[in-house]
Length: 395
Image (tube, rainbow, N blue to C red; front, side, top):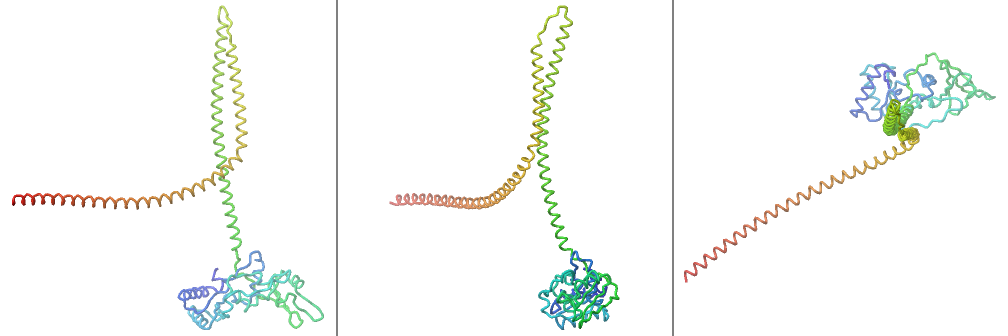
């Protein structure tokens, strides 16, 4: 929210100091301000925005800061003096700690009219409850005109004038923000001598949410359209390949027909120029021509059938495309599982390799030990033999 709209630069400075002390945890309770920062106009009811602000109260009602205890009230008053706030600048009010917990329940507006609580909204319970307590916004009705307000809410009988609508005490109407009320059976009209202004913005969160949903839907539709287009492009490519093959076959047949016709014309010319004309039997060539013409007709028929088949295959192509996407997704999951299993197997193999290496090292040590034992055994035998020799000589 634009803080400067509520109290000007001094309010901006005070708001900054409050935020600084909140971060330092200097306050004992909840502190908010300016109140207007937390209030929004319900989307679709913007035409009553200025009238609702007029009904809230005199200038400065939305500029206030609100606390819940005396210590915070004193601290905030000191901050006001530090930023140079005057008597009417960014005033501080105190509200019960109970008002911080949840928003007060407010009745629905009477039929055919609005109330300040139906035109404005807030997510901050403390700000909302403060306006109900100090501005009686749940008791102020809003109407399009004086006539409409009296038609919808004014009751006149032998007991005098009263307001229909239960909790409504004041009735404000466009275009100038005048209002009327009843007291002791008398209706009193009060003119508004202040220009109506709007400082509270419209709550666009729902519109933004719907716009984001529409954007996601468009993106999904575009994705589907691209997939369908890809399927059609693939089918068209296959059809073009088959068409080119058919064209090649057709060209080959036409070339054969042209060659046969040229040969036939040559034979006819030779027959005409011969002094002793001889009849040449061209039956085989004519049959070849007829056969080639039949093949050309067959190729054209196959070409038409291929084009018709392309059109009929498009729905099936789209369906197969969707199946391919689903299979691809499953295959990707299988590949992911296989990769995980391979990584685990590699870990096991590395562990086995280390164990095998340890066994080999142990075996090498055992082999060395056995070789050392065998050497010692041989030395012992040699010593025994020398000892035996010595004993033998001694005898």
